[in-house]
Amino acid sequence: MPAEPEFDDLFALPAVDHPAPKERFPAKETMPDAAYQIVHDELLLDGVSRMNLATFCTTWVDDQARRLMNESLDKNIVDKDEYPQTAELESRCSRMLADLWHAPDPATTLGTSTTGSSEAAMLGGLAAKFRWRKRGGTGTPNFVCGPVQVCWEKFARYFDVEIRQVPLRGDRLTMHPDDVAAHCDANTIMVVSNFGQTYTGLFEDVAGIARALDDLQAGSGLDIPLHVDAASGGFLAPFTAPDLVWDFRLERVKSINSSGHKTGLAPLGAGWAIWRTADDLPPELIFDVDYLGGSMATFNLNFSRPGGQVITQYYDFVRLGRLGYTRLQEAIYRVAGHLADGLTAFDGFELIHDGDPNRGITAVCWRLTGTPGFNLYDLSDRLRTRGWLIAAYPLPPDRGSETVMRAVIRHGFTHDMVDLLLADIDRCVRQLASHPLKVSLTRAEAGGFTHNAKAKVPGAKPAATTHPDSTG
Ligand SMILES: *Cc1c(COP(=O)(O)O)cnc(C)c1O
Image (cartoon, rainbow, N blue to C red; front, side):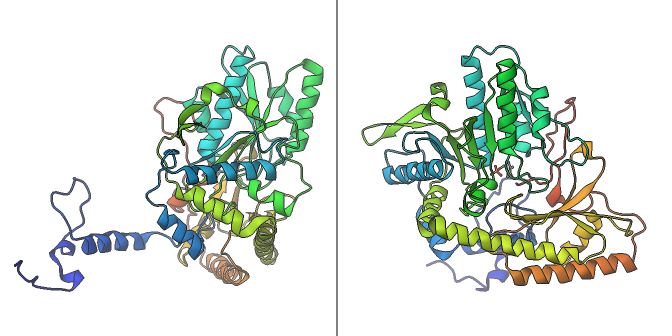
């Protein structure tokens, strides 16, 4: 019989009586309870996700979704033959999104789940690159965009495509239709329009950009496709701004990416790429895997991936439907509007995006006017002492050194929480005003959660922009 342990309290066990392994692969085992406690307690240092208004991603899931995630912990989405019903739910979701985004024939077009919008964006970009090659494109391919999320700089770098970022003229914050054509040429594989910009939350004028490209084609013969990055907008506008035309209703839009794990309400690790028609996805990108004695098309960067995200996304669609998504997203916009209203009461704040569903996503973005004796990094740092994580960051470089603050309002954030936040902003602003800092904080000092996502490549020329989020 094993000897009785000398102590039975978890915190008196030898395993927790010394530092946790950090540098070297641990030599010995640890009891599951003790190992769990060590890991659990380390995570106490993380922020509270529901107070993280810097992220766009899901931070609230209901019990049923948790149950489904738990039940599908062991399902690999790539095993279509072994888990045909998971594969079926993925296909249903793709068709539902093709329908939601007005594809001409949702039943026959192609789409796929991904790990997020980044993978979906890469797939959209690769499809555009292959289509351009097939049209006879040679030389260095390029794509044209405004201020974009870092995934597009990654696409450019990883797949050797030149990124042409249209500079923002005057006080513009998004790519303007008038500025697009001048950056396009015969090697332009696509224009990427941002439907819900990371910096400000604003929608770009996708329809205007499509018209500008129509005019370009009429004048020069260049037929340049549009890809819409609807990471957040794709699950908002169809419900809360249905008359805004940004999707496959525009003939020129050939592909759309969106993050199921942002406004789509799915747990982290869900994204979608949908093509206008099956013909818009080049066959070279399609691989077949076994499926019910036959084969099924897959087009992903990953092979193995968890299946739960897609299963839970399907649950969300069934659970809410159009009516439920509309009610829920409208409620979130109302909460964003409440924050915007509250912010207007402060002297030094000027709103850039007030959470208007026709202008942008469920976020509020503001700048500081005048010289209050502190900057937005100082405010961000102060707010962090109360647990609020709110991003302050510089606008794209062509807007000078201007900094803004952005709060993304998501499922699970309430009117009451806005009131608590406003009270804390008020307290922090007063504190900073009455105890001015000798030297204001820099972006790097104000907290790692808004770190810039520029890749570190020795000798590489610096990326054109710094990024307001590490996460999306
Ligand atoms: C978040 C975001 C991305 C990246 O999406 P992930 O799902 O985080 O990979 C791309 N584009 C925009 C506009 C985003 O907001």
